[in-house]
Length: 367
Image (cartoon, rainbow, N blue to C red; front, side, top):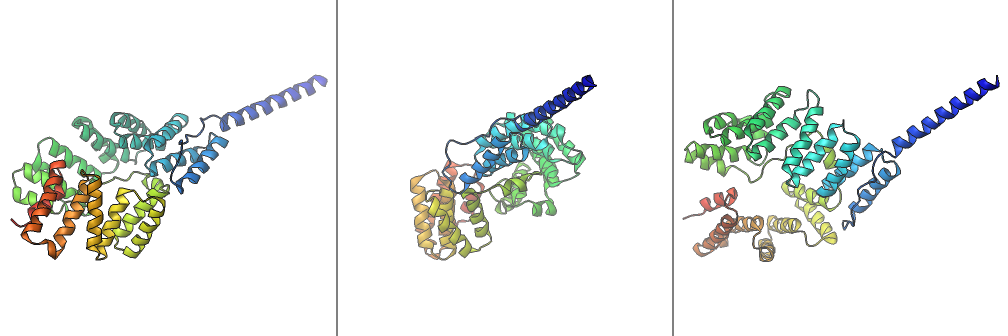
């Protein structure tokens, strides 16, 4: 009887020890949170501290660690985001999200080969309906000129989600890069595709394709409707990352949103609020000037643009904004003033020879 009691007690102690050990390992199995040396942003700082404190209190807290990474990513603190996502991917290697977000921030830093390796890990873990790792890999392979792998990844994306806009764009870009402009035109000259992708991006590609096919008139027509930027393709976690955009970066994005919607009173208030934290940000200073111009305060806007250009004579974004404003104002339509506008645009093209919008504006100036 005594022996049985001793055995029962021993088993109880062993089970208790294993339980405690399991709990200990599962609450202390990860590394401490990645923390910045200092954060200037007064809105962002307490949020980062909160997530980091949660991780340090329980290093197996996957949710807090990925949210800390997303907060860094949303604030464009890509090195810190990369380090945090690496921790997550090592600690939770079977979760697609860690490898995917790691790949995204690596690519943003120009580490394209590392980004591809990380995203290949995500692609292996992706389910039968998750096409985004494949079309994203296709775009990155296109940038590297690796069209065999780009085509393979495009087909994988197509097998999961047939004829998506990303698949169509990838096929069009591959055809264009391989010297098949007629095929590119056939793929891209699609009204639904054109309408689905913002900022006239498809027209950029069509402009290049028509020119390669020798049709200069259609090329000019396409370029006249094209924007300047490439689309930011949304992946399954883009919306979640956006939710973690906080602080001054979030304010900048909201200002841009309100400006595009022509909610100028809201935009002006946001700009003024932003300047109470940071008076030097060039993006917001441009938006400030543009808000002035849209409110009919053209002289004030022009003065602000000129100050920005004086500070940085390679600032082609502000130069184009200045040229467009001059072209909109009647007093700058004299031959002498139009020559000055032309000089501004020529300077932009000298600094950035492939600047499509500057070329279009140049062509629209009278001879």
